Image 1 (cartoon, rainbow, N blue to C red):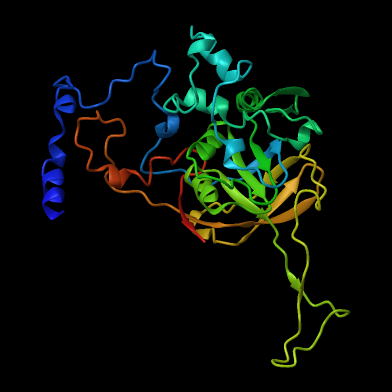
Image 2 (cartoon, helix red, strand yellow):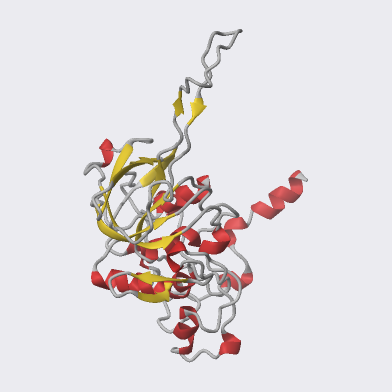
Length: 335
């Protein structure tokens, strides 16, 4: 076994004949993106990235892009399976000369962010409360009153300069972990998700993409005098938990606009701290921030688009910054 290990790994950095035959122009160390490729495109995550990130800013008068109940899973969020013939993704591919029989799947085109962001929240079984019972991957664009595919509504909000948020219930983002559930959410312009609770990994992925995860105020233990009983063994008083808040208990319909106040300095943000949310109706409620947010930038970043054959040993230094973006540049520490 030891000899097998040695034989396998002694040439691991030398590549293989097929890999070594790949040609690289002598003057080029960066990967040459094919602008016509519909399978792999240069993603926008690195746009305007620098060593002096802007930090946080408050979210002003955001519209609700989607209003979910409990148990919205990564299967509902992430692009998956085949591409529906009437979807924004289908229109995108058809407009570029791809016939329906050649659509392939989201998995095969996962290197093209234009495809994947159109497939985010495109699950045909998605239930959006804004549609009052209809089961389809659409939502309401409130300024116009139009019912649109989620992608189309999101792009319209972005073009108009409006922030958006998502309301959700218990266990938001549960299921198998997928990177596109957070990447797609970010590219659709969502600034925050307010949920009753999050699946831990999805919550961390949202933070990595600069989307703020906020929880409705959790249940608080309160002494109920009618049910208080003395614990004979320890003389403790039994505490009865009050129900957790959620969108329904707060009377949120998703038709409101939301302003979320965040500290200006990253150093002032603490795990579990209260964050005030003010609605356009004047009503206020408090959420809990579940992450510690702080800068973590390495003083030397490797080239973000190095050619596959170029040595990329500095990637480890860069991978903590790869998803940082312009509106909330951060790293996370899970509570």
